[in-house]
Length: 338
Image 1 (cartoon, rainbow, N blue to C red):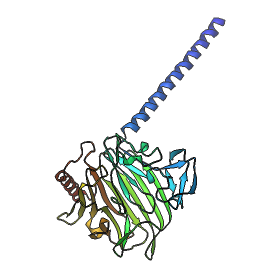
Image 2: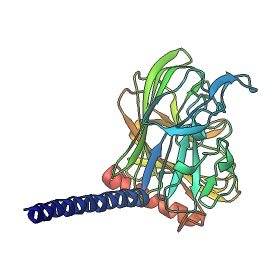
Image 3: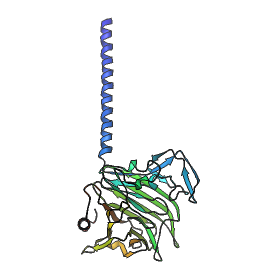
Image 4: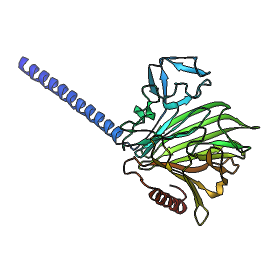
């Protein structure tokens, strides 16, 4: 009987060990699969805030977040009322989104401009950018760098309002909310501006920026709560070659620039594709080439992109860039979307 009990106990122990071993193997497999998904992802969006510090009176005449010990990613954020440019609270100053081709970031403050991260790799890099708490991403790194000098302009594809020939940014907003989403088909950033005041108008505005695998372009969909004149997007003017084109059927058009216009310095092409029916004017502003939208409360979508010569298999010449744009324009006219 003792021998039988010993055999039964031994069998149970062996079974438990086998189950634990199988579970470890399953866990290893799960970890491996998760790692593979991260490593093979072709789009990514994030917003990351500092923690461990406190708000103090800064040297620039506004409050700064001082003594932050680390950054943490969040799915959504109500931007603090005291947040402004160079507050050191949001990593690289706003949300970022990228594909395996290129990266972008939005200054989530009164400037509301969109900047470009040029990439020398086809892997995801944003989670590593700006982790030192400074703007060292302006310097060349193995992954690439911030390449666009925005200055007082809109950067590429961001929003403003043209009033008396001057682009008004987002200096007066009651509150701003940001959220991000990552899935298998795209990554996106959504910004909700509540109480954006320009001139004598005060509106809410939703802005969604999404990027797809293997693409340079961002789809930007905007929806104002009130139909007002003067909402614009644009490309910052760096004095390089400028192009504009509409398709023969007048459905879609683009504005574009190409030339030496990066911080490197080297060649960069930028373009915005717009639906002709949704726009009222294409014009030159003080700091930007502008596209003005017709007043509406319906969603309006357009596309913007950067093409940097140092990206993997990058576009190297103006001729290649214009050929690339014409191909996208043809696709838009055929499908009404990219």
